[in-house]
Length: 354
Ligand SMILES: Cc1cc2nc3c(=O)[nH]c(=O)nc-3n(C[C@H](O)[C@H](O)[C@H](O)COP(=O)(O)O)c2cc1C
Image 1 (cartoon, rainbow, N blue to C red):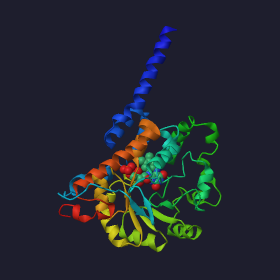
Image 2 (image 1 turned 30 degrees about the vertical axis):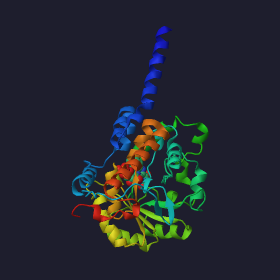
Image 3 (image 1 turned 135 degrees about the vertical axis):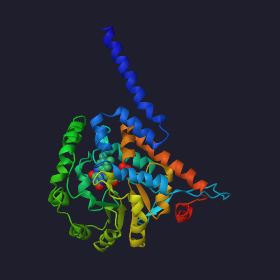
Image 4 (image 1 turned 90 degrees about the vertical axis):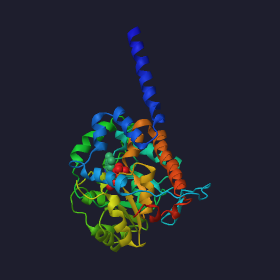
């Protein structure tokens, strides 16, 4: 009896220490390391997955770290700095958004709900992924009708085949065992069967084309954002078929290895779009300087994927909030070093010899 009490006490202590460990995280890599330690290896592996040898991801980091340098500017009054920015005509707290990613409940039992709450607390846009998520189905159905505060529809354009489906489903089902059975009834796996929604007709079949973008354009007044565009030609097509926004992304190197880094493609896409749509970027953004560099190259805002999931794994909603707060606080610091007081002042002039 004594032994089992001792065991329970030790177990409790361990859990508490892991639970608060995220408070020591100072950078986004700290969250990744902690997530690696605290998550079940196969779940971490799913988040961390990179296609092939991971060249795309490495090239992306190389480009951020070695190709783009920031030239500081001195002796400018930066006593008041604002991160506020405008996206599709509305003002938001910062240009940092949460990327769409599947299976938040592999990180933490509250899954997307916890992430959405952290996004609300930090007034950050959350790109909610309607497949493999634990958000109630009714929210998804209301999306196209512009209810519940949805502002835009992001369409993943770069994943023609559900390559990882067989691999994800068992993981998802395993994670979902921990979820409240009531919530479970509304899980989004059934969303794959919602009548009339593109997901049912085309998901994973490889048959989604520009015609589907045109079709959705006719269905909704919401802004449409095409995600996974790397070439100026595809950016042009996206606009032609009705997109209001483009996310320059290579899916964090999860799809095709040796695709060029999104950050390297950004400027060409921005030039091709020439103000006709809003251009966003994701993939490999891990620090404040990364955010600054993408904005300098013309992105309207950035989307963060894995660091959010790692944050969720480390300490749930509070820890996701901490990830976002760290990025925002540090961005303010970097802007000060560059003599910038507002997001609209950020441009190529801060990039050394660009
Ligand atoms: C675990 C995981 C699941 C993802 N699922 C999707 C998805 O279902 N649809 C999609 O368009 N992108 C998905 N993404 C890609 C992200 O939206 C985003 O492009 C990428 O994570 C950004 O790079 P970062 O993780 O380096 O910030 C996923 C990414 C991860 C890490």
